[in-house]
Amino acid sequence: MAIKMQNYGIRWTDAEGKEHASAVSYDKASAEDRKAELVAAKCKDIEILPTKVGELLTPRA
Image (cartoon, rainbow, N blue to C red; front, side, top):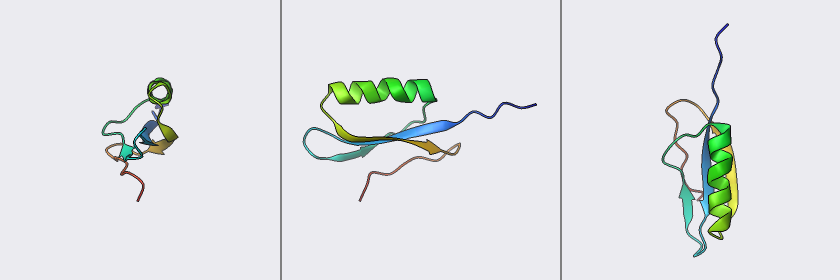
């Protein structure tokens, strides 16, 4: 039985109001760690979203 790894991307708004999206994929634990870093940097609207292999998120419009 193959184990399927789920990838995640992150979207957020920085402290100056600029929208961002991660340029890398994370596993769940790494995504949660990155979210904690973003919270500490006073970012808001942080979303951890499942992605497919090779898929990158784009910033919100």
